Image (tube, rainbow, N blue to C red):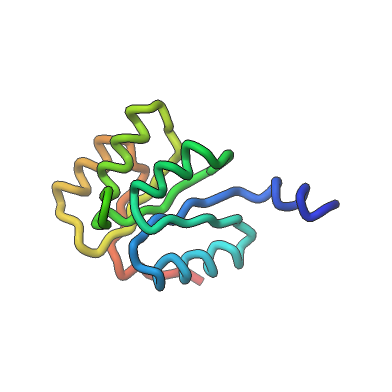
Length: 118
């Protein structure tokens, strides 16, 4: 099997976080279990990626980011008919943010620091 064929069989995850260390760590974690990862530093860049890059199978996103926060990113995706499964991973979000995220169709809301199960 060629590298291109093998890559296309792996799911693709979009990681959206303004912290480089978080993006890097999540990339390493998911790549170690065979997931292709792409990343963005804010919701604005992430929205461009979901509109251009196919397929993205799932998204992990922070909420508090510059330019466009995670809630606005999710709202804009829904407005243009994009329904990629999304999980929020945030350390500074309010309960209102969590409720709004779930109302918009986020699949889950995980608080930082998160624990990786072995």
